[in-house]
Length: 481
Image (cartoon, rainbow, N blue to C red; front, side, top):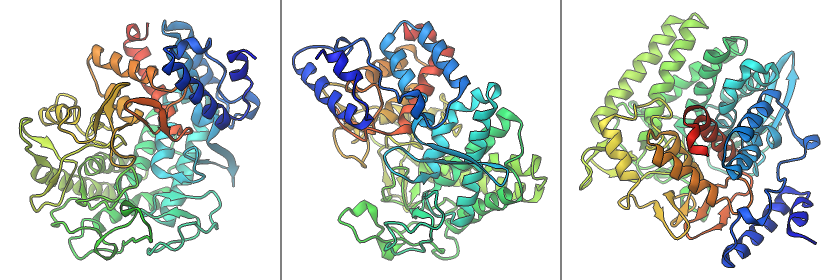
């Protein structure tokens, strides 16, 4: 049986990815390029099995495929950009309103962060596809219910009565909650999606009284986690052999000085923080609070709550100016990844988003901000313990998967935040060379061998890769030829 025929006839995607990785590894060892394995086999889910179909997304795929010279990147874009819609969404109308449950891929739970990030790149296409607009409105409606259930939880089930496998965690677990790790960015992502949806579509139908009640829980939760008047209501411990899955200090985390910054017990990776003031997430909170203020003022007609959000944003921003900056040898002032406001800093970056590298992408700083420029040099250097450079590739990693593992999300973020043609081209080339013959992104891959990767089905990384290609196609098409 020919190799191409073998690849095309894998029906189960997981089985395909496992087998094609072995084939790609064997080919690499024998000096055969991935592109030579076949004329890009069909790996996208068959049309009849796709969870949601968008004519606008299909038109975008055809525009890119027919216009760019790099056919492997075009093939990867066709696979990755629609992956969230193809494989992870569950859309229906509930009581006359759209409702969308979004899983991350290989885990049947809806993370507030991932679900927001997974559909965000489709927003510009809602102008030509009302079904796609309703799908994203359904995500906002579902997230509203999640926040009202528990603003401290990071992930939820579609069945709101389901009992979690983590039910024994020492925290206030509720039915319908998959996991209750307090992460600032979970709430920020919901505002980011709602704000961008409103600005893009002009539609205010998701922003009813329930949505307003949910949004008001966000500054309330942030203030509780400034911990000016005690430790607040949140605590978390788990019986586990993985230290980063639980919190020290009897479930309240390591100490920090209450200075106006917001405590985040977990990172976007769902790993526990070392110092509780997670700087990228506090920057994200400033942006999100101001977006929430605009929505509350313009849509909900609630100027008092809007002013409260703005005041909190200004307080956190002032604390960031005073406490977020470190000065490691040779880089000048940079933003630390974590701090405790006692003078201790953790200077790394993580491949996940929000990260220090991603701050311009999230609208928190400008790309030419001098401290960000220094931070970027640090993050993309050997001085960052989690910047990986190996035989196959180099790029940002992070503690979650461990040493020597590069995150495609980090490479994508570098490309999305760069203004340099050579750097963007290098990011695209690295991603093209390291998909291990699968045509999809992964959570992380080994710096010396891309066939050693984690998470074969990670829809967020797939869709944001599509966002990078589409952005490049629109702004710098010569880089794709």
